[in-house]
Image (cartoon, rainbow, N blue to C red; front, side, top):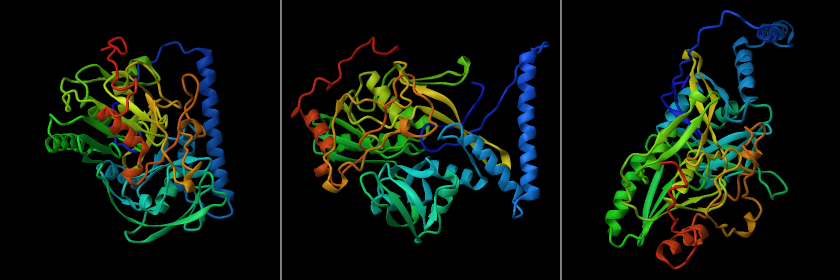
Length: 442
């Protein structure tokens, strides 16, 4: 690839280094190329003229550095919802977050129509405990209007000292009026994988893909297998609901944990030579036990890589509702002491060659969650296809769906169905998946 990155982000956060190479310029430059270059320089001169006019004539003396930073961020955010500029502090915070510990509220967010949109609250964090839901729009932060702020500026305002309160004003679909939620800031320690035994079934919940994820998955599988006993173990449920994504290498490692061979995912940039393919290595941590993966409208990016890989290889049955549909890869390109840029550099494709950009992963078995009366019609997410300026899909766009997980497993319709399928209480033609060697190229 032209760009070489130490870490790639397919969801929320990543760290990377980038190198750009240039081929030799041809001796003859066409008139069309000359005209295009001239037009570009003319536009850059226009920017310089506007910059100088603002510096000299604005009602108050502006901060030159802030003007440049805002211009850069405006250029990047106009490309798509996931490209942006990160100040040095934001870059440092991002690097900390990928390690799984940071200060904040515990929500993954994006920007939609000038407002902060919650992609997913992270399990057992202040935001989740306060009742923030996927799909909520944050309109005010401590009484200050969000409209007009960049995503980084809004995120910065939500950060603050531990044990201090912040009031966010929420606009939620299905509620006539916005309402306030008070959240107490805390140190967010992301334990990205949790597990438990559901009698004869191993349940593994993956909340995001950070540097700890594969190790946590491996430990969870080993401990539940030992506790249940391999002879009694009916299979595994891997819960990726409301998982917003994270590091590409961790998504690949988690997929590889269940596969012996074959392609896991490919990423394709602007040029054909930028295509990268990632393949599985021999070794299945579950020794071929049946696997059901739970997804919903809050399952994005790295989650969709795992679901798409195991679905295409007929290794797992996907149960739930259509996923978020974020099929793009962002590279973080450091700018030395000036922070970094987060730039969309590729789309990713499932092993069968399908892009889920603005389409999502369609589950093998659709299962809607039974909702409390007060949440009916209020927990739908429009997904990637609903974000302004998103990369267009290859084909018909449709992504996002219901994004609610009940706090009590006893009320969890999707979990109960998965358990019944693994135990043979329910029967469905999609489970277990029928192996098809022609489904993907191995």
